[in-house]
Image (cartoon, rainbow, N blue to C red; front, side, top):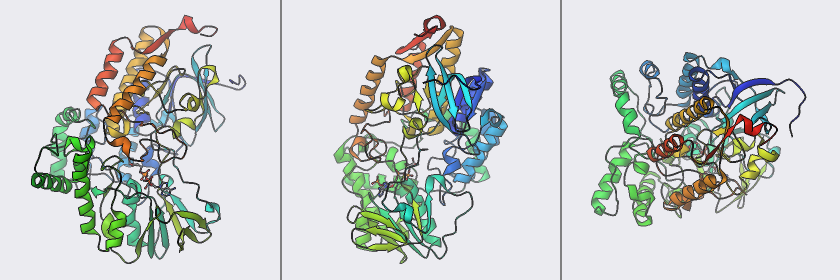
Length: 547
Ligand code: NA7
């Protein structure tokens, strides 16, 4: 498996990705541990998801004072956020600022992809190959590749024959796209499609939205942050950072109540209205705890959102098509909107329900559904990602016995704590599958993982171990635990990307640990304190000549 020819650059660690995760991981390993570190990044700059997703309306839907690093008090104090929910250009500017402030760019090779990583079992080192022909030999390999970075455009027949322009939201042009005077098709109504619709509707001559599953979209409630508010946030940062851990997803809410069913219908309605007006994730994660646990409780909030949708959409047929049914509120990633429903009240915006009239093919000048042809000039695919595992599998990582990671995880991902998997020593995943990841405020989830990984590497070095690797039993127990926790909620009941349901053929496994971020951190810390319980520690002597 390992090609012995060619030059190899030795480094202590290779970190793949220069988003929130890769930047902080390089900082920790290089600047705190003094390791030689090489970052590899496919994009021409830092930013990860915020580099690629430049579509109109792209915006973070977690509050800016939460969606940022906490590791540096100075960084917190010198950066001003301009809006409650920062738009893509602002998050990208922030990450560039971080990269420059901590001098991180010099450790990365940009415009380069990892195309292979093979374990050399004689020394438990990784041979990493890039599409530029470079070969790196590293003791540690860290995948900071992001959970929503492997874009996915479904294989609609005839796509290649389309004569107009096509766009994928996760790889948007760097120059603004002008849709003025054009007939535009938009496929997909997840978080991305819902953000895009009002923006494209403002420009296009005609917009046809192809919807498969209606979203329970709630108001974003964005607003500018003035100087006084920013000063208060800065003064509050220490308290904010502590409070984050009191909430399972790391997002702070006022007045979260235990049970929707324990309150009267009038009080529930009042409380839902208050949460609806508060915007962001308030209705989803900040209202009643049992709405994601109990079907009857869920139905109370689902009904509330359905009524809201009907009240905002003029045409009853369109309102009905936009109304979600058949899956619980909040079981798919909450979509947040700003003018989404009102966009459908404009005469040039049309909604096509592709469950009723499926897309049959793309023609040279439009999209053919079961009932008719929709002539369009441009098609926007807002069709999502091969989440969690897509970017990992694209790297062709081979562990013990030359086994591909995708084969080891053929029945679903199985990393212990989401951090490391058996047969792949010294390979770490940052916010990978089976960790709280996308249901924990990402920057905080990333910091927790990077700190754990850096501490683990420091400990291995201090104790003269050369490798660490999950035990198969611990891995199997963790898989069971993650499933049991998820099954106690309503989240596995929807066809979501949390479950891999959006990718045909992908094993249906709930890939997020729902035990709460503080609880999860405690488990990780206990494992470390207990000499990395559940992980095998490998000394240099054990691997000489093979293990
Ligand atoms: P999502 O949330 O995966 O949304 C993708 C959308 O595309 C969703 O509405 C899908 O419908 C739709 N889709 C996917 N395949 C098809 C086909 N074959 N035909 C019609 N429609 C299709 O991705 P986003 O980019 O919106 O958001 C990703 C995350 O980024 C988001 O959750 C935030 O965390 C940030 P479906 O619902 O599967 O029926």
